[in-house]
Picture 1 (cartoon, rainbow, N blue to C red):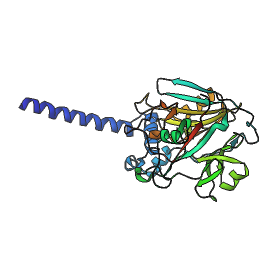
Picture 2: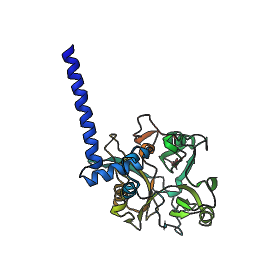
Picture 3: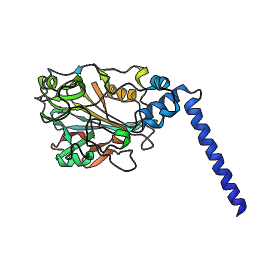
Picture 4: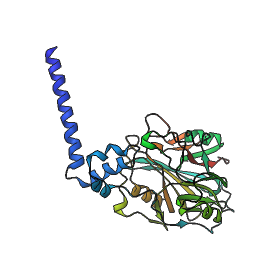
Length: 316
């Protein structure tokens, strides 16, 4: 018995040493790309304070990710997709060594709407609940939400929310990063206030970013891609008007995860002429026909979120 206890103690010491030394190598070792990815991942998670004690503010600023507010205007404004009446939805599988995922292509962009939690200001809902409540066929998590010190309940959205042409939430005077759809199905991404969105005839809008693709090219520079590796969600639009909804797995569930640049590249590869990042991490999921195409990486199951993009039911 004594011998076994000594072996166990030594094993614990060895594991402790390995954990400390590995952490030190990652945080302070010579591997710059690994350090950038680790710091970026933590700073964009729900718990950025985990990493803050280990570095000076100057060092953190060097690795601090590009803001989700990083925007330039990218728009299909003026394009009229109202004549599209196509119930087709294509499902595209994505499988790489680093991440896997799914993309759905909604041929009629007017089918895409913003759904909101029934307990706005208090607690969020899961995407699958919102899809069912809207009698929709598909859904993906959408805008960000206030998550103070990682204890947010998903009930308070970031920025403005507009659904079916109605103002739902947010400061009407404040200009912020918006992902919006007009009544004719044209996607617009950029920084706007409520009146500007009204002037554009916006029917659906949430706040998040950054912009990923503009004019069929990546908006991001390599130095911007510091959000680390995690599950990712994004929305985009093709030249023919089809809306593209993308979800990429990570954190051990279908891979280790994707970068923002990975999202941009997948969007471009599949024909998106513009695209924006949606809330990711534990929020990421893609739900279609009463099942998950991409399951949440959250070990507790679906996260409670304030908004989702849902696809109105058709003949499929």
